Length: 418
Image (cartoon, rainbow, N blue to C red; front, side, top):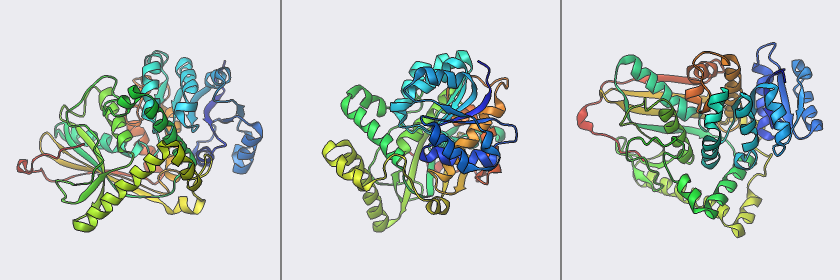
């Protein structure tokens, strides 16, 4: 089948799918053919009609996530597929399989360790053979994390400052809402981990996505508040650290350990100094633990569901536009230089910013398709898209920059990462 569609947006009628469709309608270059895909032609037509303007001729593709034949036909006629249909563990495997088989580039928004691990095990080699770039986690999970370390690596490499060692991403700001799709993904993964001890071990492995490559020791998650060594402030791990850190380690593994043999990575949220900082840190950990515990217990889950948004729901336009995020990733190199990478954007990080990140990932995949040296496989944003995505996001108003500090005195010692 001829590839008559440049980009197919699968899940265009969902909450995030509509946001991505809006961004593509504004940002896609003239002449790019974009298809909207989902289960209902009527609802797809409503989305297209609501966008107006030049999108009136966008093709509509009816396909269900549980219909392998329809997904195979979709992948065969597309150059790039963008998927917003989650939970990915429940709905995403057949589409990835179709893209890997047909040599179709793919990107998504997953934050599910078990889904990505299964995709790696089943389709990485097939995608390498077909040339399909299967790029996971192209939203707030895990673009700021992955591109932040990518920027540090490129800067240190250019300066001849040696490999990266202890590296920490600090979430300085993140304001926004939560969608029902995100909550549903959490439910699915918690249920699978609770039911299968083997999957529990996979979910708890810091190198679960690294393809067998083990990095520096000390890579473990700990969820207790602590006083961070360098800053002297109370801190807790960022609530998506258990996923984002694994994506960053996969980038390092796919690059053959280019970040360095002593590279260790963690993600933190600072809560301040003294008793006030300690109180806030403990409150954050207790709240997150309580939510996870409630979602994992069937009897309590029904009560929590009443207070949380359902799938297909999310924050209002006003809340999305009012949000913002800023991360700062700090590293020390083997030569003793310190670097800091800032990644920031306006808009709710999980929805307004994520829709731009995912849409731009799809456009970069299209623009670089067929470029020599762009091999296939199950890849990360940094490895598959790298500097091209950095420049694309800068053009959309995001901040992605690196500064170099003075050499760090050796006497300061090293930060122990978790």
